[in-house]
Length: 162
Image (cartoon, rainbow, N blue to C red; front, top):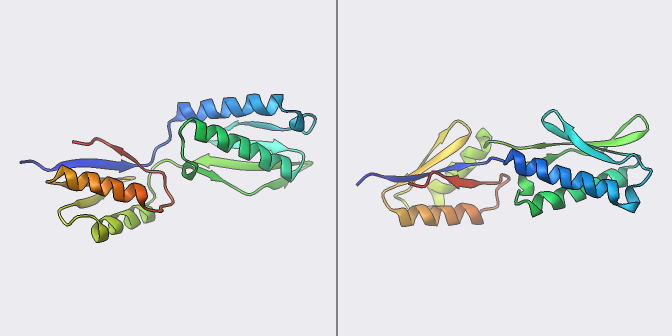
């Protein structure tokens, strides 16, 4: 019998992120505490740029955006937000969405699978994703549960379960 396998990836649905950003823009435009403080949130290339007149306001915009991401089903582990920094008379935060599993994170996941998953399970790094294979589908499902329960710095999705 052929091995069963699945891929472990870390991808953000660009449309869902865009929808979350649009919802955050609407809320920032309507909320009273954001009036007359130059508050805005928008795409700036691949990054999300948040601006406001004070550090507290720009952090509040980030919180609004995070709440919209959660409602759209995007993990906050996928959001890489920087610290507020002054730029002229306003404060800014730049945030980016993480796509792909970094090499060191992939090695940590690989080691976790080797140490704690059932012995029949094998994993290999393929670029920015991991292929996990085994003869037993039950072992693969227990490996998925192990990875879901692990405290990792990346948001993981499981695709191509065969």
